[in-house]
Length: 157
Image (tube, rainbow, N blue to C red; front, side, top):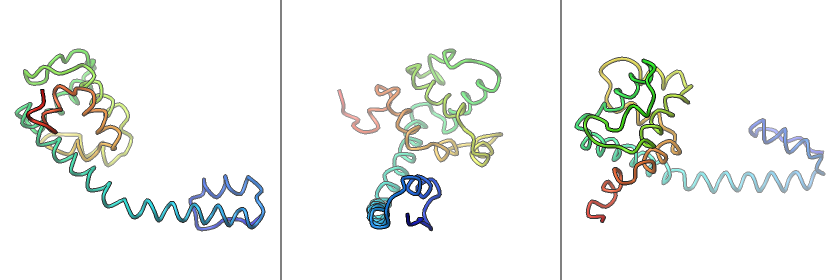
């Protein structure tokens, strides 16, 4: 067995535990390296799309709720022991409970100390959006399609 080095430890541990022969291990290492290179080539595109969605969603929801920091209302309510079902609307705009739940879950699942610091306190605006994973961003948009779809096609019926 040829030990792999210079790779993420979980990958190395798993591959090394397979007790592969040198040529098998080398073949898997080549495939892994090729896949990393392939992803590296599309990463700038994915990064651009993700950040464009963050920016457009921030602007769009600011327009819909008339405040960039609309999410602070949910953050504060959650901190004060309220439940997401207490919000049939946000700042007078009706929302799907799934939308509020998706935002609520972001705060429930937030563990990164820097993200927690970024969304805590007063005088906040769009910090919330930069703490979202791509999956969380997608769940928020998907949760209330009637609210969000105009962001993509304002003439949608």
